Amino acid sequence: MLLNKILQGNYSLSSLNHQIKLPLDIDLSVADDDPVRLVSAFVEEMDLSDLYATYERIRKGQATPRHMMKIAVYAAMNRIF
Image (cartoon, rainbow, N blue to C red):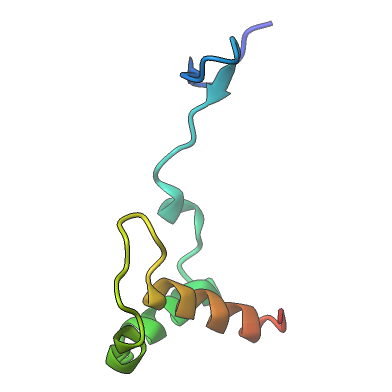
């Protein structure tokens, strides 16, 4: 059976399996009229300087307060609390 998946070696020492490589163009799979784009554009225009002032530091690779605000607004919009 021929698989059409892109495989790369799993670099952990405890396994001999392979892992699937995920595509990095996730933005293309979200429709242009999806509400998540509206929320993203809305939060991008907000002045979040007071919110950022409450954080002492944000480490590399950590979600920023702006990203967390987008998630919270989108969840509340979909009645997920």
